[in-house]
Length: 393
Figure (cartoon, rainbow, N blue to C red):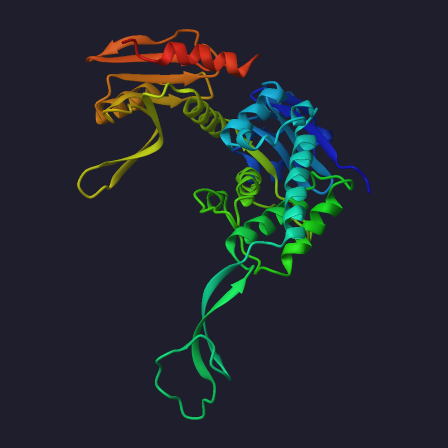
């Protein structure tokens, strides 16, 4: 099989290509389907007759057509990107990424992480997939469970029964099957791993009703002694589903792109790192909803809210910003959040220092910009950030 043509783009770094390097149809497909991820300028006098492309804060892999792919590379070290994922998706508690930080590319990391999931699915399959009792109602030629109180129907000889079915067709297994299907279609797994992915999918496919699942379905699930080993598998599923975008249309076997919104990943990473490292008398709430007005017609989502655990009183509003081009609306927004919650401080968090850092007081509210750097040692960067963040007693 011929390898597709792949062009590489790094976050926020414009790259030009000769007009003949990208066909008009491919350029139009990239612009029409992925303009949020890639800024596309077609050849014109403004671009010197060349294509001009720039990744917009996303990393991953776009299989635009079977013969033309786009690789979006991060501006940070790959090892740090993997560590961000480890925190953001709570994979560190399962020690899943040991040895994976040595991967040299995103496709290699994707494939090896997929292999981790597949091995765990196959291991669970050898033990027997989790089953649960589900309530069913059916018309049967015999009594099963208890009879349903229903009026008799002339000519109806079957009995309406309420009963429980012991089945593996439950969401715990459906999430695994749907994720494996997405992985198999991604085009990012080599023939070394792909047969194993298909084997694991087939093991589940005959047990469940094919159902689409979202990344949110992997969160907040109930685990107990019979399905506790599903917890790390669902954490991995959340990772794959959250970064598998909608499939594109060409061909009978569409391949979903693997796309990571770096702004969202940075937000998740900072939140999870803080939860793991805050002193015990502090508590952190993420994505708290604020309703304005009695009808709740206006709603806001606050990135992070720092509370004193003993009193429950909110002290600091934090807002993560992956891009460092601070705008007046960002400042106005975080001030509004702090005023609504009655906080004494508002903090904007960036991955690199601002050219003009903020540290001022607005109507009794302290407004600051702080840095949680993504270059170098992330743990050291986090400790430096934490020392600057915590209010002085």
